Length: 36
Image (cartoon, rainbow, N blue to C red):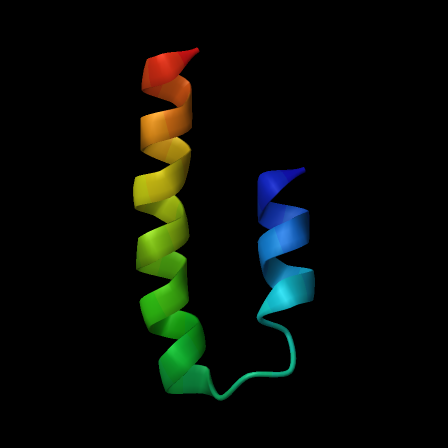
């Protein structure tokens, strides 16, 4: 679900921004998994 939302949110953004956002989303996912 998180990946789907992330792709949908950053789908229309430039590739470089998407690459950076992917790293950010990975960090967020790690934090969420740690909290859960």
